[in-house]
Image (cartoon, rainbow, N blue to C red; front, side):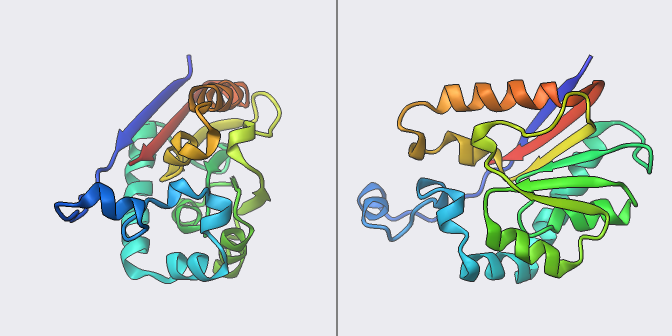
Length: 186
């Protein structure tokens, strides 16, 4: 039976006393409010991909996700990296010499992944809110680092539950019968 594990990572923000008011004025806003394809333009994608802080965080979370999969990864296992972005998780999968496929909604982020040389992975431009675009039983394992929160954003006009349901149903469909998935979100 397939298993899905999610682990959350909370980031604390220093929000002033008039925080809600400031959020509304764009002083401190969550990027999820605009959607990944809008937020991660070329400038933001390059910042994300070159930030030593983001590299460390993403690397650590990817390694933890691999541990939580509780399976032996190798050349005989195909891994899906949901919301692969700039290839930071893919770089970790490359270290494990694991074949993988990643998909992301942001073309500039995928360009950063290509520039990173994610050689073991194939990169696909696709929006996870439309479901997972792969054939049944294709993946032995799935990881998603910092991607699920994008499906819970206000950009879906109150249809977030339906979007999540569509995503998880299609995800389950593309996994092997004993496949495992681990997601980190905030």
